[in-house]
Length: 362
Image (tube, rainbow, N blue to C red; front, side, top):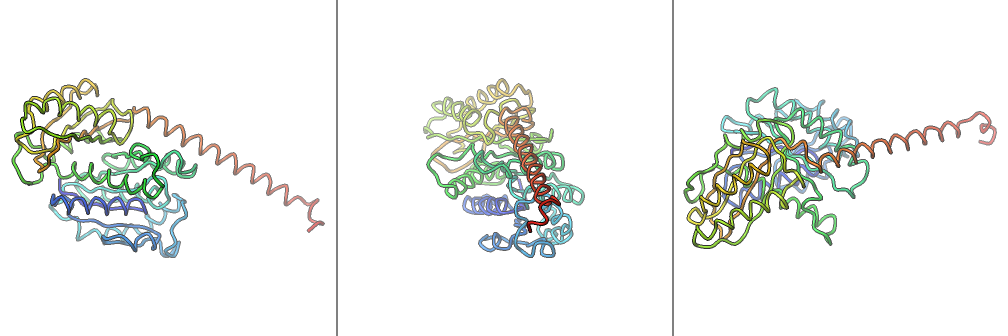
């Protein structure tokens, strides 16, 4: 799947850079262009991809300070400049455009929906979003921003693949180490998905192509991505259980959105050396996915990859009924209500402080 990536905001730029690096190191050649867009100049300086600073008239390169309404205004004002920068990168060979953003900050959560809408207006290829939810411990402002942004982004993009920061964060890691490991996990999973159908070493029996990815995401809304791998045997018959086992793990424990099992559609990609991939195992795993997701639209295929391991990648389309997503939206609602309560208390305190009876004391 030939893609063009646009990272919006700090997290979006870093994840986009990780995706570009993974695609290059694996030799997939799936990513055909990449651009990082931000209102904070400092966040762009260390990125190894092309960058564009927006909002200079409003925030002078200092970012929007977590204000996603300002982030949306900045992106709207400079949308023409962004589209001009993309003009030479989005060519006729592009099969999809992916807007990558952390949904908790200001520029990413506010600007990503604006950019997705503008891209859909101009280009006749699917515009997908890759959105990263803030972790539970990242603060109320991030929860509020993400709750507001997710609703808008899901409406504007053709489909939004959601990554829950808490899903792939290991205990004992520092915040920075956690973000780095999450970025690597995203790059491995999403990079493998984008590479499906590209010409790589080896020939599979039933290679997944771009149309199957697009059809899986056709229902729109929220999508999730699961991944797991295990050591493979030389004998494909021995790997029947390996394929079914890693598929279960990808779906039940390795997904980007925990407990997302009900889905409108699903795609199973089994990656590894073609001679080691068990067709019986792939078919069993696909049927299991049908039962688990409750969907009859479950596609399956393999992806030739020179590796001693077998990996299963599970793409789920239409997972709005996920328990984790409902939990997150409730947290965002409570955080918004608490922020409004604190604002009202501050307003009342300010009024008391400005009372005429106190004027003589000043």
